[in-house]
Image (tube, rainbow, N blue to C red; front, side):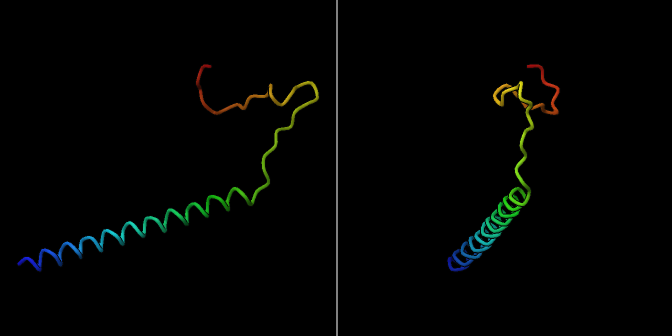
Amino acid sequence: MLMWIIWGYLAASLVTSLFIYAAYIVAARSDELEQSTFTEYPSLTCQVSNEQSVQGVTPQLALNVAS
């Protein structure tokens, strides 16, 4: 009876370890995909006229938040 408990514990921990390993693999692949998505396109630059400085330009977000 004790051996069945030990074997059950080992089997449960093996299955849990496989799920955790699969989650790590999926997370690593999604990180690689996200990094490659952002590096394929040229960086976005802001076109500023000569009267304005770069520090004075604030990005306009699509949020309706009063500042």
